[in-house]
Length: 401
Image (cartoon, rainbow, N blue to C red; front, side, top):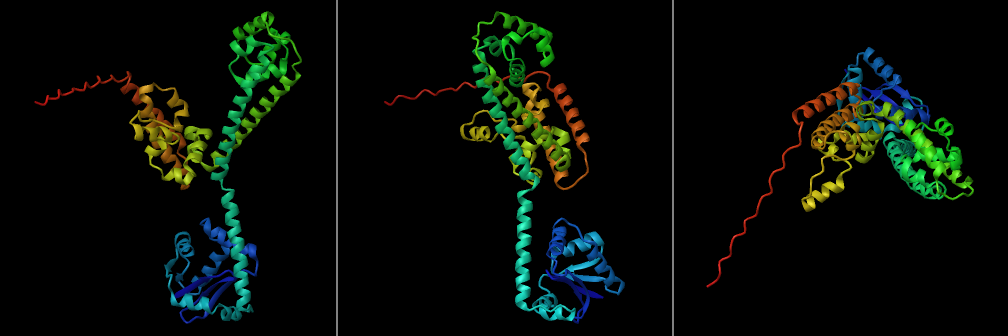
């Protein structure tokens, strides 16, 4: 027997071909209950109350269910295995909805058409607000903002450090010009030791992890330095701010890794959280990355170079953001393009697995890349020979008689 299912924001009705109400779920004017039901549908989840509702109908001899809500119909068929039909222009369902006020009275709910309309408006407004709120807090957006903030922090640390080198260089120019290249190591030395007189072997060894040769060189430069003496407290405070900013960068990167482990585990395992997040941010979302062809993933982040190639015919780029991945960056120059192509293909697979909720295959994908890299290195041990330049032959113009 057939049963028609009409879902409304007041309750869910089941009725037969004669219009008799067979079963009813009352939302009890509980807006949260209504919103929860439809949010669950959006997440492909059928609530237990609806399962029991259909089970009662089935036990009563009704084994075919007709819907005008395609989402509810497809989930009922896929998740519960019932025989369902979708009829968007069902006359029975349309007639039921048009006379909803009368049908509500049959189940003991007295509402005027104005009250029904007001309730619909209120719930629709809350549903819209909830969706907007969820969209604004979606992990894709969070990842994009974290990547943007990380880029700003890294640029700021670089800029602040260049000023720190100039400022502290007035006191100990040899340190900033010759020995310490890493900005954070330099800031640590300045904030912890301050004056060059404190740059003894023991002090340096206790504060910073440096090689023996550098520690001895630092100690010697400090003894022979020609820098000026002045109050270093403000410089030390400035160096401390740089260290604090770098610590926050590390916290953000750790938080980003935690998000990627849950949100995109295959991508995270394949190329790491930082590059993975940059690709997602550049693509616009994990979904967009999942739908991208490998050739486009390969060149994400190299758009300017690609446009220049298309416009002027300059050398075509072989990789974009994925060049930051160590196994591409450290590869021989003539093999980087081939490796980038392989990596981009695997990233495309990983993105699809993560977006569509597939199984975790990050380890297998990584192994596949390693095997391909070995094959490429064996096949192309030497750089390709450059083709000789083509000489243009100018035709002699015939003189006019």
